[in-house]
Length: 273
Image (cartoon, rainbow, N blue to C red; front, side, top):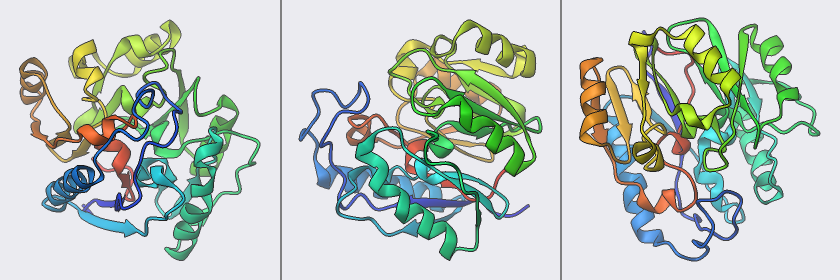
């Protein structure tokens, strides 16, 4: 099996300059860039023990470019780049598209009238041959047929209803071996039913409101390792019973912008077991 390749971006220009999600409210200008750099370096060091890290150059006018999960969605040599709903992030698009082109990806020409925010809202299941795709806040359901057609994979649409969890990767984390770690209240009733129908009860790890609020679901999973900002003992125990080792990486400065470990990464080899 090929070693995971993960795209990251240095937080050289990271800042909270606006509020486009509830976590940003009140945090404008309220973070330590030096601490953010240390925390992201720590995350990179952990990931490099288990995967290859690939870098994209940061750009001065786009403080959220550090969140590479939103660059797009990748399957094989195909990619669909994001078209951000918030105007504040649209300047990132040209840099991510350029990176995909320069690195040999076939890029799908998604209509710019359609909101789509990449791997923040599209996650490959690790046990079945389908792609979970969110909608409700930052990705529009009109994007879903394009992903299904281009990637030739079944799309399962799930709707977010809690604005704190504005991308599915903030509350939903497919894990190796077909496991799923998720926070059910983030989804509407119909979507919860879809999840239950697709993932057996003994493979579902329910995340509490407390752990979800610490972005436990926004984890990087590489093999049997689950890298996250912070974990309760009960969730650590649940993951250990499923065969996973939790590695904590403090990312408090990034939580102020509404992101954590998963947001700071984009898997370039999908799907990985």
